[in-house]
Length: 203
Image (tube, rainbow, N blue to C red; front, side):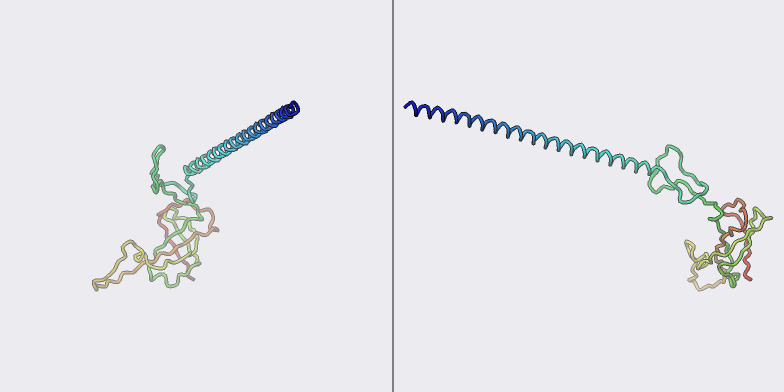
């Protein structure tokens, strides 16, 4: 009887040891799971921080882009005329702010409205001498760049049409573009709309 009791006590002790080992292992598992949860939480926090950084960078990029819109660069170098804006005024989309007139000698040309009867021998490339009324004592040189494909009245906003049957012959004028030569020396200060007398050398 004592031997059986001893065996039972030994089995109980082994069971207690095994139970303690099981509890220890369960505690270790729970601790590992807690660490994994913490790692997952830290990973989520890091992802949220990265998202905040990306959002801040995007806001900075958008702010720099908006700042670049405040600078309007003219497509050509010239003089500002008809300025319609002042400091502090709001600007609407499509609003005309000013007119930039390019007065670089390389950008200037003369439009000569010759009669159609005067253009029989005129060809692009022919030499032209020009006298500006403002500088009557100075002669400039140039050449014919092109001849317009139609008369000035054809390309007007309301071209004339004679549908009544009454015919009155009117000598039409055709625009001729004359470009200044770069070898003509220093150009005098020219302005748009000046009166110029051009002479085309057809021979």
